[in-house]
Image (tube, rainbow, N blue to C red; front, side, top):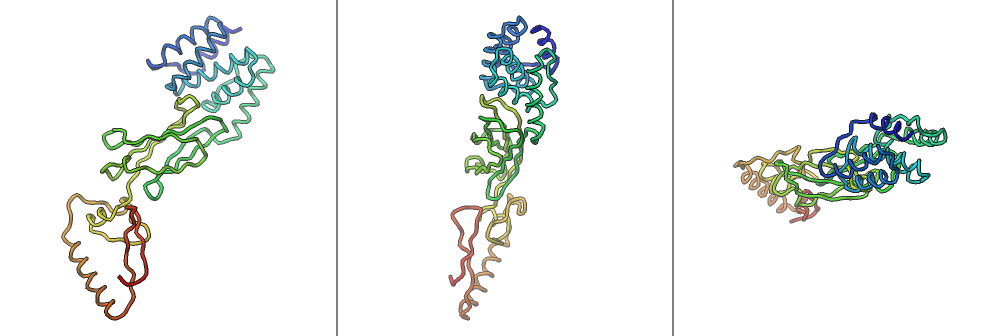
Length: 281
């Protein structure tokens, strides 16, 4: 019966292993095909612990681990592994070699997962050089999110790992940007062992600093500085900036002499924010 299950599970997905995890995965497969249940379970656990499985490899390890746990009567491990396998691949069919009770248990897990949104991760830009990450899917314990920022050359500039909450707000430090005005952010939804379950990418743009606004020939326009998606910084500076500054200063002095209180801008320490304070300079 185990050998028949091997044939069924081998046809469920296309199995391929990268060199880093090929040895433990190959050893687990060999033990599974020899119907060595304990050795196969240990082998798939070792493959998962490499943290380098993904795609069909990851589904394979969790599905077979769950089935093996069913055979040994470890219901908790079976539920945990099969929930992850079905979250990754909801269309997996219940192996017919399982007992009626085991098939019912598998159908219960499938029905529970079907009531939730598909497993996924999304990332989008947010105000103030931040990004918002959203995680969807069934409730799975121990998941994390890894965020990696890269510059235009693909060089990694920043990395951080946080718990996989439904909504995560990431504040990117200055090192993630360097001297660039944009960064590529890749987020990965990780299983408890660090294997990639889902991933997403987004291009983030910095919010203009005072120097960048001046370089673009602009001026502060509100409580938050204009983002570079609205004001593109040019490599060469224009000659209108000093003239505009001189005219603005003369008007301000004339109004102040007439006793009119005016608002003046105080640049905050944060490069993306401008605060306007009422009063005379």
